[in-house]
Amino acid sequence: MTEQETDSNIVKLKSQLIAAGAHFQYDELGASYSYDHAWMQEAFRAARHSVAGKKAFLFLLNHSFDPAGCGDGFEDVIKQAPKYLREYSDPEVRAHILLALGDAYRDRIAVANDAGGDPFQEAAAYKKDIPQNYAAALRYYRRAIAAAPASAPAHQATTRAWALLAGIEPLDTRFLCIYD
Image (cartoon, rainbow, N blue to C red; front, side, top):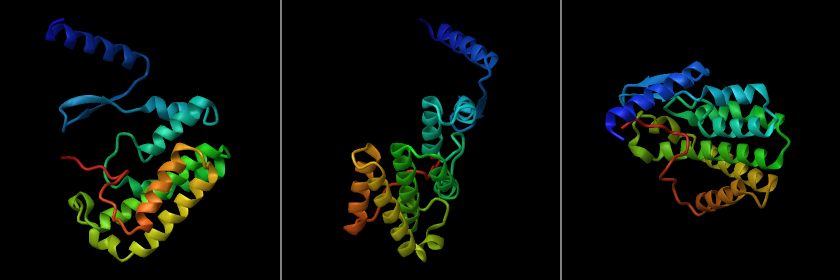
């Protein structure tokens, strides 16, 4: 298949997806269009407690509730995720939420310690709250482990909690998005 045929097929597929209700946004950095994940948001709104709705919720949670957004999404997770703890009784979904909250507070610690090079010049603002963020991260990791002890989120929470307790500063983030 030639490059021209491939481009033509992509244009045709994109047109079909748009006709079916998909939305695309132009990404200047990548000089291309990208899908905005609106169907995930629709699936979550339409049937949030169905299997598809839960998967859509976890997708949105893992993208700081804004798949198209960028920046310090950990703040969005800290603000929005707790309300879903009241909504979901499923232990594994709760473990995912609790892990995300622990990771969001861990991201604050990482930003305070210049992980990622402090692209937004926010390290100083987060330094004063490092002890509270450590305590919050560990609290949520412990709750994630207790919610579903044999789950993947509990395993991740165990690893991250151990590193924090061992005094290993986080060098990476989960919810911080930086354009190159």
